[in-house]
Each structure stands twice: as structure tokens, then as C-alpha cells.
Length: 333
Image: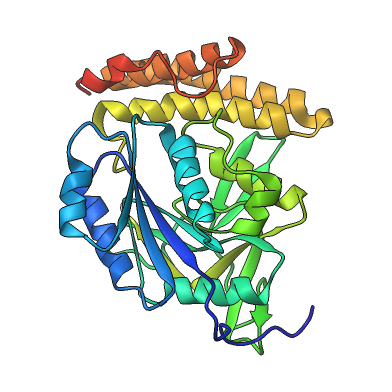
């Protein structure tokens, strides 16, 4: 590996930080406030209003007049909403687009660290900071880290970071004498994702069949297959409070989309020799839930019904936004 520079070049790449908003106004405020405190100078902030059913974008424009807002006419899901912003940012000359969940907040130096690694590794198509869940968590307790895919079990994992004895320790690759480290992984969480525009121009943006969940895994896999690397950068943290848009009855969206999209992802991407094994693993998981979830009362039965709809729609060839989830909005769990 060539010896990379140890600092960001004098001409900073243009980065657009993109925040997707549908619900969770207070969390979006906190995310935007943290972005305004970022030390990286060549930064634009783009808020994508993903068809929110209120005047949220007008309120946020008043409170944050320096940010750009792209208003969409309906909720296109994470994949479609993110794609609208990605295309807008790249058409505006962004060298990198930094995707952030609206329920995430960032450190002031996080973007500078990610860009430094990205510029030193031109083969990196996607980079991410360590995601920690909750207000008081830290890297040692954070759950989200190295993305891994197990095709036999048909599961995706976010594994904890290995123990590292100082910069450049076991399991990490050093940058410029160990100033920063990074880990190669199979995928990175879409809750914070620095994407190189030239890589997206080659492989495309998110697959909108997913609508919600698994689109980040799919994008990273396509980057990897095209020869790009996905790098997790420890030492920089994004704090995530989780599920700002899918709480209450909408938590059943997660059950539906995770079930359906797990089938879409593994049946499309698993090697042919493991595809049947992956299918059996997914269906066995669903059958176990058929036994266990009814014992958990109304919430368990509702979750099982959402999972059943996901299985049914997959085999019925229905992708993108689901048309069978209106009942989730008003259910009292």
C-alpha cells in the first residue's frame, strides 16, 4: 500500500451532509445543530423532507436559514428519499455525500477524520464512523461497528470492534504512521455513511425495491463487488438515539420490511450453492415466530401478522413501498 498523506489536502473536497427527515422534528433539530458545529469548512448541509405531513420543512428553514432543503411530495422511504438527495448533491458538484439519520448527532471533528481516511484511500467507496446507541454510550459499549454477512444463516451483523492496542493495532490498518486507523468490512450502517460520488456514478445509488432496511447492506455489497472498499473508522463517533420515525405502531413497519427485504437481499445476493440454505434459515426463523409471538399478547400477534405480510409480499413479487401497512398507524400496542 502506498504511503498516504497524513492530512487532508489544502483544497478540501466538497462534502454535502444529507439529513433525511420524515418525523421526529426535535431529533432533526439536534442533528442539524451538531452539523452546524462541524469543523470541516467545505461543507454544505442538505435536508431532504421526505414527504412529511406537516410544515416541518418551513419550521426548519426558519430556524436554520443557512441549510438547503429539498422537499419531496411523498414518503419515498429511506432508499428513495436518500436517492433524491444523492442525485441533487452530486449534480451540485459534491465529491462526497455524508448520509445521516435524523436521529443521529455528530462530533465536530468526525467528518474531517472520515475525509482524511477517504483521501488517503482512493479505493474507498464508503466510510463510516463508529455508531453508539443512546446518550451515555461510548465506543466500548456501542453495538454498531463492523458489518458482516453470513449467507448460510441469512443474517447481517454489526459486530463490535476488536480490541486494538493503540493506533494500527491488531485488526486495523494504519494511516501515515498510525495517526488514524480503519477497518475493512462488508457493509456499513446507513445511519452515517460517507459516500464517494465517483463510486456511486459507477455502481448506482440505493436499490429502491427495499424502501426501508437492507438498502445500505445492498449498496455496500455492490461497492465491494465493483472493487471499492467499505471502511469503518474508529476514533470518531456518531451518536444514534434510534428509530425516530418508526415508533409505536410504526415499529411494525420494521417487522414487515425486515422480513420481506431479508428475503429480497439473500435470494438476490447469496451464492447459488447457499441460496436454498439461506431460504430455509429465513423460513425457519419465521416458523419459530409463528410459535413464540402469539404467546406475547397483542403486540406479538401484530408483529407476527406484519412478518407474514412481508413473506407473502415477497413471494407475490411486491417490492418498494408496501400497500398493506395502513393498519399499523393506528394500532395501540
